[in-house]
Length: 98
Image (cartoon, rainbow, N blue to C red; front, side, top):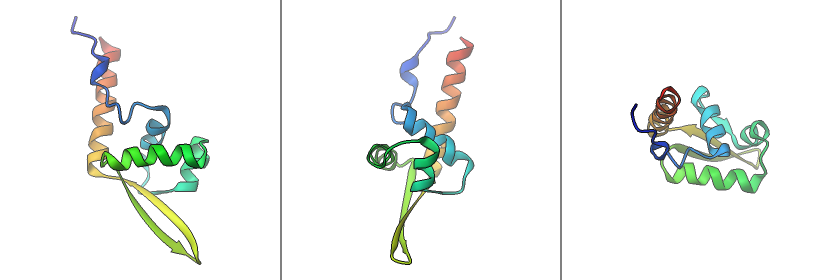
């Protein structure tokens, strides 16, 4: 039996809120902050902290704009983020099958 190595899981993704964000963005072209907040059921501040961590890792990109003088923040999964998420899922599968 191969070694059960949970430490191979990506710490940036391995958080309930960040995992939820990545799971939503993997299937969407982009998502607005309020959409993510509603789907994940997180507070503004809590979600912001987790989004910043994903952005700092290069897993998501952020586009801020104003529409009718109201701010709108859109999030998109980057190529690096897509690869990291696929690797994360692959590692989980390996752990489950051991």
